[in-house]
Amino acid sequence: MLVSSALVYGAYRNNPVPLTETAIVRPEHDFVFARQLASVELAVDDWRRARKGRAVSVLRPAIVMSGESGSADGTSALARALAAGYGRRLDREDPGAQFVHLDDLAAAVVHCLVDRVDGVVNVAPDSWVPGDRVRALGGEWLRLPLPDRAVEVLTSLAWRLQRGPIPPGLEAYTRAWWVVANDRLRATGWRSTVTNEQVYVEGTEGAWWADVTPKRRQEVSLTLGVVALVSVVTVVLGLVRRRLRR
Image (cartoon, rainbow, N blue to C red):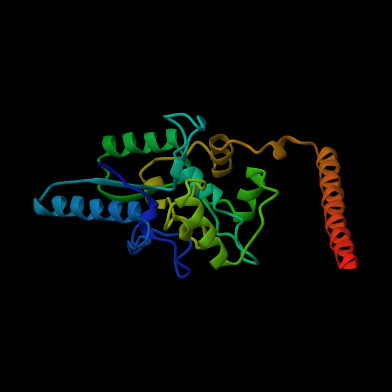
């Protein structure tokens, strides 16, 4: 039994949607963790083929989350980093995303052991969540989209300064599709019990903005707009006065 990750498929524009277990394994080169998982899968497959009769279940789950956000046994830093990577690019649509609950993954592990499922199986709920829906569920509202190059530079700088959640190489997984099909595992009798949306909501700490009423949001937005306008006017007047003095 090996629990790997759907990250080994890599995120590319020509990926089929969704990816099946027959898809080529080509993890993002700059993301060391994904390349390590692919290497482990290869070693396990070599071991299985070395002797007749050996069987190995290789599970490739989508982004794993749980309801215990922020705890040692809850949502991983990797999952939070991926979820934080959406909505950063200017004039670009975010790809869809999948989130599988930790309990469903555990059930899949037990199921594959009991039924002696041999080979690779994807582990994910049915379908996926559109990128704009992920941002809406996360309550994001003050995220400024930027050109791709600017995003790369800022993300890299933030990581080096230990001020950003996205490690090198992981940004690619927020730009292209890598959602998976769960048909093979479903055919053996496994079913997910938590939807993508439910997993994401339970596994992320909602922003304070998501809990504010629409009326209050309008008031806050208006206040911020007035403050911004006053600041701009103040700066302009200061420049004009300085110019006149000269």
